[in-house]
Image (cartoon, rainbow, N blue to C red; front, side, top):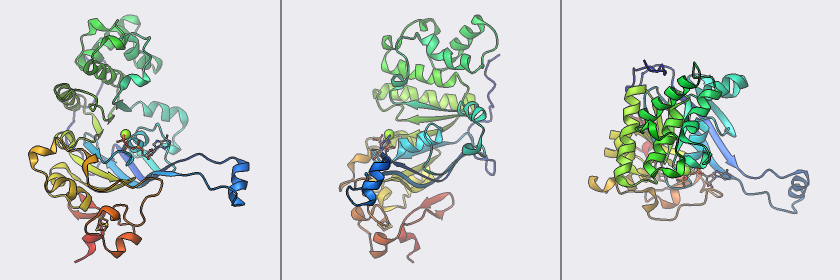
Length: 349
Ligand SMILES: Nc1ncnc2c1ncn2[C@@H]1O[C@H](COP(=O)(O)OP(=O)(O)OP(=O)(O)O)[C@@H](O)[C@H]1O
Ligand code: SF4
Ligand SMILES: [Mg+2]
């Protein structure tokens, strides 16, 4: 029998149940805090305050158990920042993060450390965070051993590691080798085996297939979906590739300069995008082209997140912008069942 006791009621989100993850009114700023002398100099007008990037600006996001939520947007819009906050490896500047209904800021440290194992990240380059001097068996086995997830001695640990490698589609007889001895696709599988080894319930995949060849991408995406079935995993799937997101996701959130501008079931957002930003990207694109679409191809320059435009951040690039757009931030509002969009046009009748 499997050493991992996962729930098997996988795919369908459970309406009305406590969400797996909930992000409530979360903002995140980056910038250097001035020291005492710096603060005095700023107060006296001798120097300018340091620039602050508002990477996330009042974000709400809910992910149900077993759901795959796709997160897309142009480079620098805040996707990775949001992913890291969901995974609990970056604190928000403001707002709350709930894991299965519990506010993580109020959890005792020990409980939070244990709970944090349940949300793992899979990165574009998994080996940036892995010691290249360790053999794969140790890369995969270290965390579960440290956290007491394996019962029994060395034999039990070896069997446990083998199980994770098989689950990720790797030959366990290769576990004595080192990261550099594997291909890109195999390395990503090792990263996935390593994440699975701590028995997560949620995977935050941040451009997890972006560095791979197309044929290998398909294999890894299939692996993610098989794991969803087998282990009942929940996913936040970050990607700049619309084809990948459309293929995988139940629901999609589109970000623009630190804000979610539209959120809907994947089928709905790709067939009936509401927000002018989403429409500009999708409406005129033949279906066959969607897989090739990346968010960098929209006309007009992306404004700097250091100085985002007032009101609706999209107004300098929006063909429908009117006076209110420059002044007032549009809130995300329901425009159809399960479909939200942040555009003032939805209130103009
Ligand atoms: N540690 C940091 N210190 C300062 N600024 C940061 C930091 N991390 C992110 N930022 C800034 O926050 C903004 C959002 O960055 P983030 O990496 O979340 O974007 P992204 O959507 O993941 O981009 P990409 O598609 O290029 O990965 C960017 O302007 C980025 O420069
Ligand atoms: S709020 Fe105004 S500027 Fe923003 S997307 Fe809607 S119409 Fe365009
Ligand atoms: Mg990123």
